[in-house]
Image (cartoon, rainbow, N blue to C red):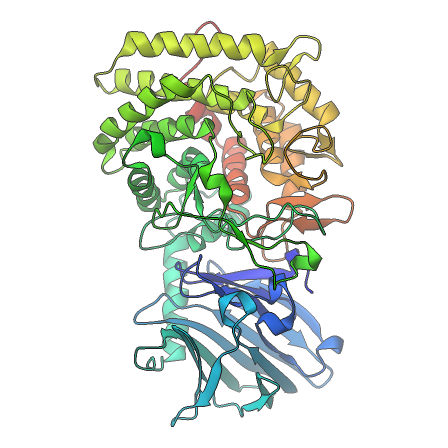
Amino acid sequence: MSKIEDYALIGDCETAALVGRDGSLDWLCWPRFDSAACFAALLGTPENGRWKIAPADAGAARCTRRYWPHTLILETAFETTNGAVKLIDFMPNRTENSDVVRLVQGTRGEVHMEMELVVRFDYGLSIPWVTRLPDGSLRAIAGPNMLVLRTPAPLRGEDLRTMSSFTVHAGETVPFVLTYGESFRPVPRPIDWKRALDRTEEFWTNWAGLCSYRGPYAEAVERSLITLKALTYRHSGGILAAATTSLPEKLGGKRNWDYRYCWLRDAAFTLLALANAGYHAEASEWQKWLRRAVAGSARQVQTLYGVTGERQLDEREIPWLAGYERSSPVRIGNAASTQIQLDIYGELADAFHHNHSQRLHGAETWLDIELGLLEHLENIWREPDEGIWEVRGHRRQFTYSKVMAWVAFDQAIKARERYGLDGPFDRWRSVRQEIFEDVCRNGFDEEIGAFVQAYGSKSLDSSLLRIPLVGFLPADDERMLGTVRAIERGLMKDGFVLRYRTEEADDGLEPGEGVFLACSFWLADNYILQNRHEEAEALLKRLLALCNDVGLLSEQYDPTQKRLLGNFPQAITHVSLVNSILNLTQEHGPADQRSEVHRAAGA
């Protein structure tokens, strides 16, 4: 099985696939990001579905790969003794149907190639009925799903797989086009793969050209933004947390979650990253998704939703998949959607404010929604919750949750004052001050000299690095300086930041996980706000060095085994990367923008 960092992403802004260095496409959910996978070898074995194209003597071949400049078109180059080939992988933006195009191009000599197509619908469970159509293409059907493979290469069936052996000479191109359709509709029409390639390159190049950032680390910023675009469902504007489910936070462990959904807590940071890089249309579409998702009763607001705002995300386990490197269970759906997480109200209020400050379309429609959310939060902010890390243990009075409850009221006050809007300001100011005093009294431990994970706890938590990033306290406040020092002493592992000590916390799970990469970017942001620029840049460079060869990052990293962990690629990691680079290289970066508009009274 490939390492997580050995995968690259291709997609069409409606779904996405992971392709390994070995030319094996091991993960693809069709037709949407959150549909059942038809290639699920990533979480099981090749028998659970994959599509591999590689030299016959792949074990002796030398492999390098890259994305075509400014695109999501993947090129994998294989060098063998007798010749060389390039495997070009991409997904064109859809017209009638969705396609994966794989082109084998000979560049030197001749190379004997092999293709293996193992289609298994329903997350690797259902073996399809495969027939050859009159035009020579193959059709695979199971239930409502249909795949059609078109190629000039010879095809044969073997042990419920489709195989091909062929030779490519220099200057030749052998195309493979796999198309998804619904089994009860006509067979999808073939596409012109040459035109599709040109059109796909043009789309991504034009989109990347909209980026307004031209400073240091511009390539990393662009790759992260392209990744965010690839994780955006184009019909709704919803941005997924990741393209995968159940890639483990600990190899062999049970911390395996489905991240193919949209989290509210990523809202404001994502809006800032997109808007500061010049992508106002994407920021506006994300804002519209947020508005639609939370519309309705404030009591029913969830922490996460489906790509078009679905609310029923019931969690279940898939027993027939062994899990990535036998990390089980494999989970579909996410029970965190039913949790109470108070920090999301602050994120929504921040998103509302930046919606106004960036003059995004439809800002005024937030007003009634925000009033309902704040009225509800006023009644529940004192309650315990599951917190930013979505613990599966008992609810607690998490400090960061209270900080973000403060942000919700502070942002509402400041935004309405700035734009001349009405509101119950006296009551909101009273609640804001009450929350501020509550956090400073119960969330700060005088003995440790730092903010702690929860009231009455002695445990540290890296979410508290966000305190100055959301404006609760300035970064140079002695309490924040002490918190940063405590995290440097107690939550660092090989120079990177843990979320918290899982062996100390009652989070309902067995201990052990990697370092959470976004937290290290938050530490870099604190360094920048504290004018520790050299330390910030050094940490940033170490983080960028963790990117795989095509510039992608997952959720976590294991410093001991030097491997990426968790779902991949991870949106919040790439959002944090973009924001940290902008914070470091711009005079007025996202951290300043987010924190300056609301400083705590009496801080």
